[in-house]
Image 1 (cartoon, rainbow, N blue to C red):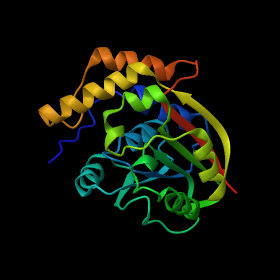
Image 2: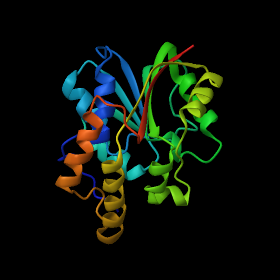
Image 3: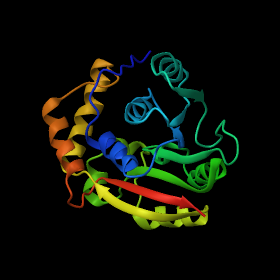
Length: 226
């Protein structure tokens, strides 16, 4: 069984996700975090503003049980992106942080339709997913086993076809993050740890995601329901 812990700093790619959300008004908003894992985002958002109503949706029952026990002020449900246990027009904001690439192949449109369904009129979707280019594909070991990367044009088309208009788009992260992921995959395989730490690589990849320069690795998109 995976050993989850909230005793870790938020940095790098996950901090970039959090910072993107913090650019928008969150007070008294209802947020659905799709693929909530062990609840790191819920913990951070509630630290920022306890008026935020947050529901996490996660297929891992153990992660949901951990999150419901450890994170007070948020609610966690077992479910997945293709069939969300959420009523229509429920959320002001939905997140798909590093999720769309994990749904079954060619079901991305179905996942986005589900997100559209649960969002209120003019609701916002925050999405991150790996960028497809030669170096990022080459350096991702999981890519060779079906971990999908996307061109921006495909994401743009998917969002438009399923009821969204892109408001903001950027790419962050680079080669150091790719090296960090290679180290992470190998170390997790050897040790079985859920999230092993490497301070040097974490510092390097965090710098890439916090840089104002355009990156290579991860798309960050804000889109509005239309």
